[in-house]
Image 1 (cartoon, rainbow, N blue to C red):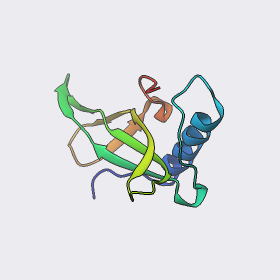
Image 2: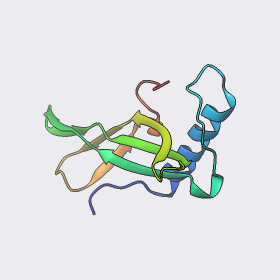
Image 3: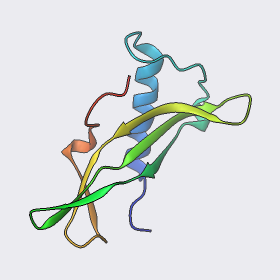
Length: 101
C-alpha cells in the first residue's frame, strides 16, 4: 500500500465529523454513530511540478451508516508530495485545502 489513512488521519477525521455535528454554519450530518467514525482515502489526483509530484487526496470522514447501508460524512481535499511516487509525505499540517461545507 502506497498511501492510506493512518491513525492521525482517523483522529483528525473524527474531529472534523464532530465539528460538523456542533457547528451550525457547516453542513448538518444526520447520522452520528461514533463507533462507526472512519476516515478513508477516496482518490488522489497526482501531477508533476518542479521535480516532485503533488497529490491531492480526497478524504472521506464518515459519521456512520445510514438506514439504507450507505455512509454519511464529509469530504476534504488535502495536500501530499512525493519525489518517487512511492513514498508520500502528508504536508500542510494535514489541513484541508478548502472547507467542504
